[in-house]
Image (cartoon, rainbow, N blue to C red; front, side, top):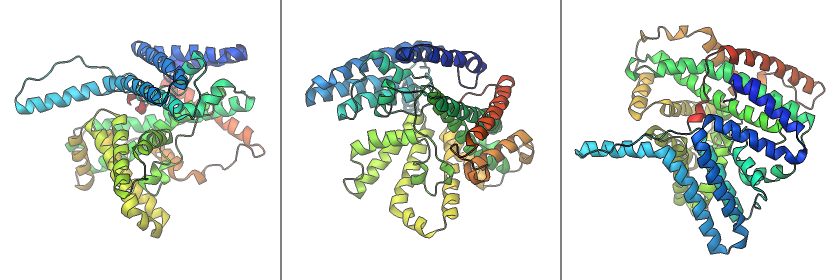
Length: 467
C-alpha cells in the first residue's frame, strides 16, 4: 500500500485522517499506531512481527537505561545494536554474503553453499537506523525514555515516514509525540505538500523511469552513445524527483497529523561540490551518518589523516546502507573520495572558480556516479560508461534517442527546471497576501491531475523502497 496507489489514496488515507480527528485528543497516538501498524502489515506481514518484537526489546532496554551505571548502560546499548544490526545484516546482506563466498569457492574449485534466498522487506534500513537513534539518544542523555509503549511504537511505525524516511532521530520527534496541536494551517499546508509530491512522482519520476528502464534493460554494449547520455541524465533527474517526491508526501502527511519532519532535500544539484551535495541530498541520512558514525569515529578532531579515514569509512557505510551490491559499495567509495578531495584540493579551486563552473563540474561527476548506482553490476557500469565516451551508433532496439517521446522530454524539462531554475517558478511566499489561496489552488490542481494519472497509469514503486 504505497502513497501513489488507489487503495491508499481513496481508502486508507481518508479513514486514517477522519479517525484521527474524530477520536479524543488523548487517543490520537493510539489511533495513529493502529493505522500505522495496519499500513506496515499490509506491505510486509511477516516482517511486521520481527520489527514489533525488536521494538519491544528496545523499549524494555531503554526503560532500564536510567537505573544503570555507565557499564550497564553500555551493555544495554550493545544489546540493542546487536538486535538492530543483526536484523539489518540478516535481511539485507545474507544473500550478498553467500553469493560472494560461493563466487570465491567456485573460483578455487571448492564446493559451494546452497541457501534459501532471503527476501528484503521494505523499509528495513530506515527502521533499523531510527530504532538505533532511540537507544543511543537515551545513552547520550539527549532524550528521555518514551514514557509509554504506545508513544514509542508510534515513533517506530508512524506510517508517513516508515517506508522511506526521512530518517527521524528520536530526540527530534520526542516532544511532538507527547503534545502537539493540529491547526487548520497544518492540514492545509500538509495537503498541498502531499499534492506537490504526488504530482512529481506520477508525472515526472515515473515518466523518466520508463525510458531509463528501457535503456538499462539492454546489454551495455548495445546502448548507443546518445541513449547512454540521455538515460544517464534521465536517471539523475528520476532518482531526485522520485525520492524527493516521497519525502514531500511524507512531510506533508506528517504535518496533517501535527508532526514536523525535517527537510530531506535542498536543491542538491545546485551544489558546487560533493561536500555541499551531501548537505543538500538525503539530509536525514547524511546527518545520521555524521552523528552516529563519523563523530563517534573521531570526526575531524584527531588530525588530517584520521579525518580522511573517518570520512572514507562513513561514506563506505553509506554505500553499504543503500544496498548489498558491489555497485553501492563502490558508489559510496566514489563519493567518499570526492569529499576527501574537496577538503584536500578542490576546496581551494572552488574559491577561485565561478559558481556556475563548480556546479557544472559537480553535476557532471554526480551523473557519472549515478550510472554506478543504477547498474546491476560493476561490469555493466564500466561498459555503460564506455558508451558515453566512445561513440556508438544508434541502437536498433530503441531507435533514434531524440524520438524518445514527448512525455519523457516534457518530464525531463520539468525536472531540470525544478532542479536548476526554481527562480523561474512563481515566487509567492505562503505568508504573502493571497499566498495561501494561490498555493492552495495550485495544490488542488496538482492533486486532481496526479490522482487522474495515478488511477490510469501503470504503477511504479518508489526507487528507495529497495533500500
